[in-house]
Length: 281
Length: 141
Ligand SMILES: [Zn+2]
Image 1 (cartoon, chains in turn cyan, purple):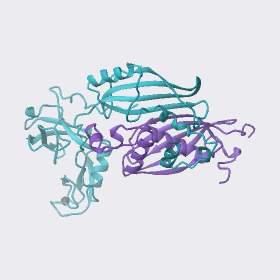
Image 2 (tube, chains in turn purple, yellow; image 1 turned 180 degrees about the vertical axis):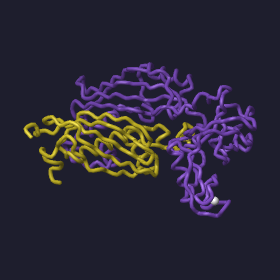
Image 3 (cartoon, chains in turn purple, cyan; image 1 turned 90 degrees about the vertical axis):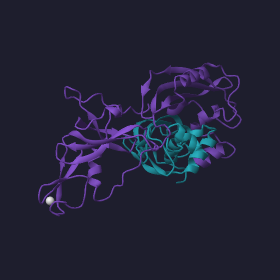
Image 4 (cartoon, helix red, strand yellow; image 1 turned 30 degrees about the horizontal axis):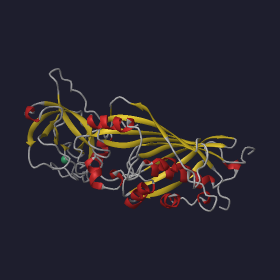
């Protein structure tokens, strides 16, 4: 096992070969793994906890932290045992993967009663976020004509092109002006106010990463251009032409953010923000 | 490189370890999972990974831990003794990505050295870690 480990890690440290070989200390947890057959004869506390979290819908698991202390090197022939204690279970947290609980365990690893290592481990047991088929939305095609728009989105700015020749704003981004033909332009940042100019509600066909029915709006921006974007924060059958909306940016995954529009309340404020979650850990 | 590692005087707070690039292949992810006896399907079965909300399989924490340990002992040589390795995972290591490990000496006290390690991939920070090691015989240096 040491040889296989070193081969995978690309670890050529001579301390791990030959008659006096020690095991790479970072293998500490490896010696405690149940493998395909699992561990027999353990108390049921940990399985019980995982079972409870499964029942709470948190069926997926991901490791987030590992802290190891090595008290002495392990050598071939050492027989490792371990005692595990569940140290803590967090409140339910919202993460990018979905909501779930952080579970911290501590393992004391002795050889013949002598402590050789301490292994503390944290996992996130979570309910996969909706759209949990894992499918991701299509990526935008970014080219030199529209790169500036996507750079703006990355900084949460909705940038509109404006012709330097005649001042006409245009959207989506194009290499030249439709009014006067000038190739010269600069940008203006949209203030974020708009109204629903038109919309469709998509019921069919279902695309991976989309969750029908949903509303796609053609939003007339205060700056005088229109943009196609999701209308969020309102049931799709409540979207209406003329509805005042405000711009926000929604993150769909670690690389894709898009401008979306949310209807204003009666008093002119937009509602609850979409939760973007926190990092695991 | 005989004897391995830098000389005692060369280890100061702020010293940077040369970066190490690791290609995250599907093979490395699967081999690392098996070498660590971790048969969770998200580390070898893309279909299962997708059902659990990940677009593809991803490297397990034990492999990351091993790579961080190797990165530091590669630099300090075979006489270096690892005392503590603590890692926190962020952006997953998925096939086709490259992780670049960088390290900086954060503390150097007699024989004991603490190194901060960061592994960044195309998505962000895969791992942030702290490695404590001793360098026997360096106490006077
Ligand atoms: Zn013009």
